[in-house]
Image 1: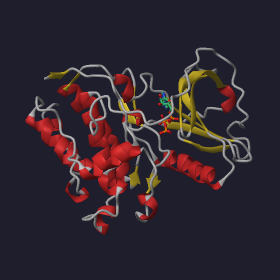
Image 2 (image 1 turned 135 degrees about the vertical axis):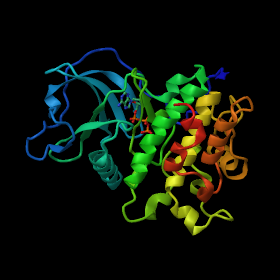
Image 3 (image 1 turned 30 degrees about the vertical axis):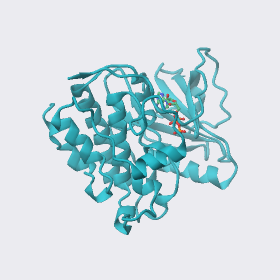
Image 4 (image 1 turned 90 degrees about the vertical axis):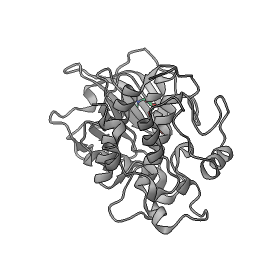
Length: 321
Ligand SMILES: Nc1ncnc2c1ncn2[C@@H]1O[C@H](COP(=O)(O)OP(=O)(O)OP(=O)(O)O)[C@@H](O)[C@H]1O
């Protein structure tokens, strides 16, 4: 089946910086790799130096910083370089820790690769060199026709990435169309660990109100609600599955599915819709398998939601190989 999609993606953030097409030389005040404390980590076999990079244009910006398209002068390789915002307070330091700690652990074809992390000697300025995804985020798919086959391919790739992260005990906490990147090889990868958290010991601080609230699960938005148990609160991975399910429905219908199309979202309306409304469903004309798949992701009770690993063997994905 084919669904005709409409524009209307939810955007609860400020407009991104307009992309510039001007080429200008790299003038990062960041030290190159292997110069004392300058480099934090490297996953690549061929180290890239900050001074090798020419900025091409701005790809976008978010709460965490600005992302540039850059070229390595030595071999013409293209990358995305995220310049993390400069803060000198503890918020900056903890963001820095998250941004630099997690990419070091992650190596999956379904997660945007982090090649290098540059830091200046004082540590107050950090840039992350990433794999460049030439088609941008899933938000750019608005208005396009998405078949169930295409959706299954998209859904599987994101799920492989989530399953990988969850097995490493990493909760992403901000899955949404704007954090899923595409390239022209038809690959989709999870990006942006700005609010991720490694759950090595437990769940502790994962109940704080960070991330994009529109895609947050009911138990995260209102952990004090009747019926939310301690077990529910501790099942933090299920929160990613809710956000994922919502994102997949949005890909199908073309607008944020918890509100009527064209409705301007505000925090209070979203919280009411998530916590007191019925979970969104796949449209009536979809196959039973797709309807069931969405239902398994969007159960209000976290313990009833399927895990990433269970969803990977759901008939909606299995029967579309
Ligand atoms: N690896 C990449 N390749 C290509 N474009 C990218 C890459 N990473 C980010 N971008 C672009 O840069 C934009 C900003 O990314 P960034 O991670 O800073 O913020 P965000 O995820 O949009 O917002 P926030 O951090 O507030 O959630 C993205 O929306 C995307 O268009």
